[in-house]
Structures are given as structure tokens and as C-alpha cells.
Length: 297
Image (cartoon, rainbow, N blue to C red; front, side):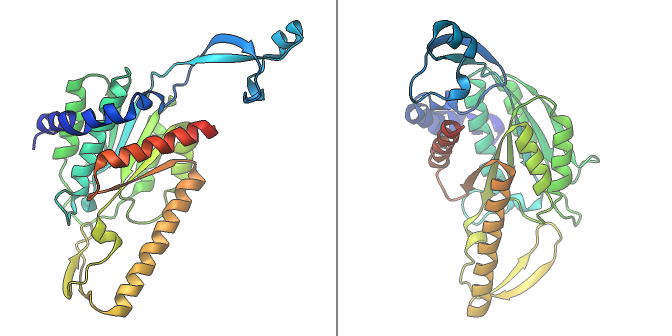
């Protein structure tokens, strides 16, 4: 399916549903960098004391708080992992196809508010290790981002995903405070925690973690030959063996806990996206997560 056909399909299906269900919530999901004084009013019990204007309070002999109008125009950056494991699929769609749908939907919602979008695509085939697409507006630009993510080939040479170097590059390229989506399955080593934390301190960051159900629960399918999509290493496994299945489940559980801990320590929101789940349901869950976080902030 072409980028244009994918976008049209999502506009008629998922985006129409979300517009009805979010009922404007997507307008408050992301905060801009600028604040403009909108009004002064008397303090109420639920107000944050940090918003008290002490000069006005002293003159009026009663506490007053400042209300601000937020500038919501931001640049949204999609950091897209296009290493070998993203083409894996045990269901009707691969992780790369799920990534394209996620980018198309979130970009459309953000651009409706006048925000620009850009992308930094992790690709081992590139000399620099990534492709850089500057942030711009417009449907044609979104189609360019989708087409690039759709057609970037997976490296055939053995390699290991280097999320750490990718995030170092992103931290160097993104100068102004932005909204950043790190879209990956986060396979490989956990050497990227420090860079993710640095990204989370400087930007409004969301880790969109993609996964396939088979990666979470190994099917009981007898003897299977599995191949690492990045190193091409092959293993013959007996998936019926109880000890092996128990050990696999234990490793999955340990990795899930490590991922959750790493995201929490980095101060970034984590959005879980499964290739077998309705993406609209996942994004509604994301909306609730963002509202809770902004309420706490």
C-alpha cells in the first residue's frame, strides 16, 4: 500500500473515530514552550500557590493568581527505528506497518493544530547511521515522511541495533524544546538509558514501544528454526520443552520490568503498541495517560 493510500485509509477509519472519541482532548495533549499572561483572578483553594502574583496580592490585600494562555505550536519529531527486527510479523501487520499507522495518525492530529513534524530515521544502511528529515508542515511533507519510512530498506549485512548512538545524534540535532516520539521495539542492549533521560529532560518525550504477540509469549509449535533478523544467527529450538518455555517467559518478564524502569527513570511516557491491537484503542489509552500526567504537572 502506498503512503497516500495508507493515509487516506486511516483518515476514513481511525482518524474519524478518534475525532469523535477524543472530543478535542488531542488539543491538550502537548504543551508548547511559550506562556502568555491571559488574566488575573482571586486565589481559590484548588490553585497552585506557585501561580500567585505576589505584587498584585500585596496591592489588593488578597491573594491573586496568574492565568496563562499557552502557545501550543510545537515541532513534533518522530525518531523511527528501521532496523531489521521492525519487519517481523506473526499477525496481519508487521511492526513497521504499525509504526507507519502510528506516525500518520499522530502527525495528522498534531498538524491540525498548526504544528510542524520531522523525522530522524535509524537506518544502518546510511553512512551516518540515520536519515534526517527537517520539520515542516503540510500533507505533502507527511507523505514524504511516510514514504521514506515505508521504503527504507533493511540492512542485509549483520549488525546490532545501536539505539544509544541514534539518541546521541537526536540530542545533538534537536536544539529547541519539542515533542519527541521515540518509536522502536527497543530490542538489543540497554546502553541507551542515559541518552533517553537526556532527551526526556529537554523535550516532551514519548517512548512508543512496538511489539508482536509472539515476542511476548512463545507459541507451542514443536521444533522451530529461529533467525536473528539483524545478525542472521539461526537457532533450532524445541518450543514444547517446559524448561525452555519457562526460561523464555522469565526472560520476557525481566526485560519488560527493565524497560518500564528505564522509561520511568528517564521521565518519559511509555506507550505500548501491539501489532494485534486496534491502534485507536491504544491511542485513547495514550490520551488518558497524557491527561493524567499533565494534571499531575
